[in-house]
Each structure stands twice: as structure tokens, then as C-alpha cells.
Image 1 (cartoon, rainbow, N blue to C red):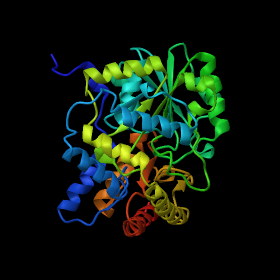
Image 2: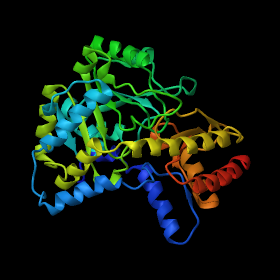
Image 3: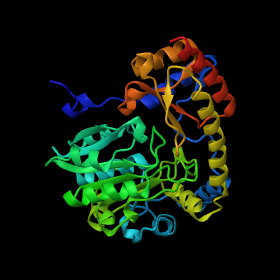
Image 4: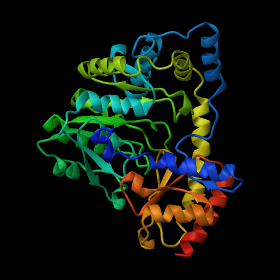
Length: 388
């Protein structure tokens, strides 16, 4: 008899973390690796945020807080959502969690029963399907099209609904594609969801990393029906370069928010106390860091786009958000794992295989790394592509 629960037979470790770990191991051995694997900003956390956490530690703020976070932070998040996203939530609808990944899992666990189906557009962030499986529900993958910028349409959504459909997961700006949904596209998806009372999990962790004049539209903001059905996911990792702080949050209808609080009370309890004071400073302090970071990413993005568009045997869609390119490698005829392994072992370039995102003939390249690494890595990547 196995000592492991049956559901874990379908769960694999994150390929994105595995590739990054392998690249770091090779670098530690002295190899010159150009890594495009990072899913985190390469900027340090702003000093005023670190200072706030240090001050909290020195003031003895090291004890338990309310399960869903300190009242000041929940109020600041509600204020932020009203000001930036045009959604009105009370602080008791906000739950601060141990990273936005934790926020997503709590939301899925709160809403989905065994046997429920969760519609996930592919390419998708690698953890969505496994989170769904962990709660006993079933991921229903809808393959999107490159010519539609990898976005699910209302028609594709409607065609995918069954009697078991419980939730749609929407990620805008998206990982790994960088796609950004317009207000009209979101309104059309919400209309379909509302007709069947389908919950929308709206992952908005990259909301401020936008280019080409694009505007972020929060799903819950487009109508009262949208707000009634939407769980908004966000956090501090990408926009404030706080990945290791592990702080995310959900904003949800009252009955869902109450269940998320209960789940957290029996699993992690409150997120780290002194880190919450850093998050409070992030929301209430100087926001110029965000603009400076976006400008730097945009410069790297434009450079990568100009290079990638000239490389044979690949195709790319220009990303409007986040800090990734999804490179379509179909013409090379290699599986993404085979391609990524050859890239790393022979050309010393780390890229995440598209298999991790439900699109096997592709790789994800992150530009959350220095321009020097980008130039070196693209030189090697071009050499690899032209050899195949």
C-alpha cells in the first residue's frame, strides 16, 4: 500500500522552479549560464519597505495577528482597490495570505467541490491545474490561439462550459504570454459567466507591469454581476519586488471571504506579522519605484522583441504586460523539454519549457534579468535556432 495519497500521483513539481534550480546549480559549478528562467523581478525591495519591516521587528511586532491580516493592511488594500481598480470592498472582504499562490489555492479550495470543472485557458501559469487537482476538482484546459494573442474568447468560454463547470481562471496580464485583456473582452467573458453563475478567479498579480499604453482592467470592476462572481487575486511580489516576503491577498464576496478566513485559520494562520508592515509601507509609500521598474522592463522588452523577430524557426507575439516572452518553437519539431534540455546543456541558456504552461512547442523567456544577460542569452539562443 502506498504511503502517499492517490491525488499526488497526478501532481508534479513546478518545472519553472526546477529549471531555475538546475541553472543555479550549474552557475555554482562555475559555468557561464544565461538564465531566462526567473519569474521574479531582479530589483531589490525598495528600502522604505524593508525599513518598515525592520521597525516592526524592533517594536516587537512579532506575535500572531488576526488570521486574515492586520486591520491597517486590509484597510489599505481596500483603499487601493477602490482607487486603482474601481472596486469597492470592505476590509472584512480582504484576506492577506502567504503569497498570491496561496491566495489562489485558498480561493479554489473555498469554492470547488470534488468533480467540479475549472476552465483554464492555455498557455497558463504552471500551478493552476495542479491546484485544481489538489482540491479534487478537474482542470478543463482550453487551448487559445496565437493569432488572438493567447486570450480565451467569450465564444470559446461558452463552448467549454458543462454542467460541472464551477470556475474560470483568468490571468491578466498573463504569465507566460504577457497578454492583457481589454475591458470589452472581460465584459464578454463576464456575460457568459453570469448566465451560468460561474465563479471567476481573476489573478491580477502583474497589474502594473504594462506597456504600449495598455490599461489594466480588473474583472470585478466591469459590473455588479462581475463583482458578485469574481475573486480578485493580487499581491506584492511582482510590483514591489517582494517575492521572498510571501504576501498576497484575496478580495471576494462576503460569503467566500469568510470561508477563506476559516481555511487559513486551520492551515497557515496569519501571514508573517512584520512582513505585513512592509506591505503596508509598499501601498502607502512612494510609488516611483514601480514606474522606474516598468521603464527598465519596457526597454528590455523592446530589445528582446527586435531580436526575436529576426530569428529563424520561431514566432512570437509581442507581450503587453508582465515580463515574459512565450516563444513558439513549433517549426523546430522538438518537444519543449527536449529543446530546453539542449539549450541548457549545449548552449548554456536556461529557458522554461512550454510543457509547464500547457503549450509543449514553446519556451518562456523572462526579461527580469539584466540587459547583459539578455544579449548574451539571445546570441546563444539565435545560434541554437539557426542550427535547427
